Image 1 (cartoon, helix red, strand yellow):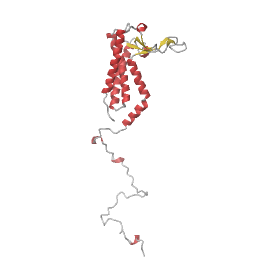
Image 2 (cartoon, rainbow, N blue to C red; image 1 turned 135 degrees about the vertical axis):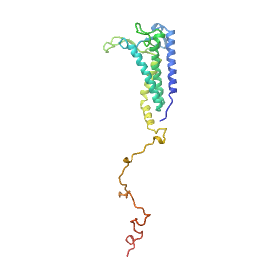
Image 3 (cartoon, rainbow, N blue to C red; image 1 turned 90 degrees about the horizontal axis):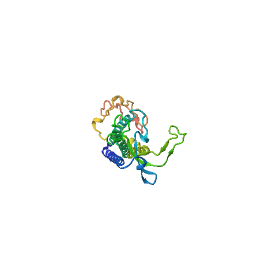
Image 4 (cartoon, rainbow, N blue to C red; image 1 turned 180 degrees about the vertical axis):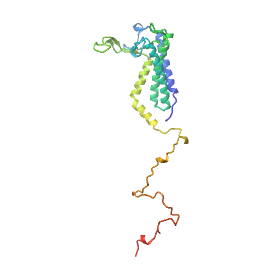
Length: 259
């Protein structure tokens, strides 16, 4: 198992966080929210569209007075857990592809945590009636892939009859999505390589790590020859003529030229 430094993977996370926050601030200070400030990038299907997301992905919210606060705290815990797991994988010598994907997921988590933690104070975008602006900031979304919009059929449970459009997301959401997809698509390769790495001998072999097999574990069965006959476990030394039971090599009994 070859340990790896997690530093370069955290540097990728920092770069992606900087890109995410820069894009959000540029949109906030230079665009009007909603359709009035919408900017077409590629035809009619890829646009910049400034919206505020008060809840989770796709605008979902927790229906509780402290739902937003609980969501923000959960994001903080998840961010810390992802960071710890990235360090853990690096120290175990995980494949680089898996580590890059985890770095992207970490960047996305941190990017949205910054929004929900600080934007309610510094950008004053906390929802009306919030108990405190801290941890109640709304996430800024702007990437709009306008594939379809309209009213959903009535027969669809829960959302039937409501107006729907393709979700609007940000760079942080994209990092999470791409990182998860990489892990899903290449999971067999990643974890096969990890399993092979775990099967290697440790690098820090030393006399202190050696273990001695207890005497009780030795097999005490009598050794045998290749033809199946048992060997004497304590053969008598032939160096002592008094104790040797062997007869002379050319004894009459073994002679092939007997009378």
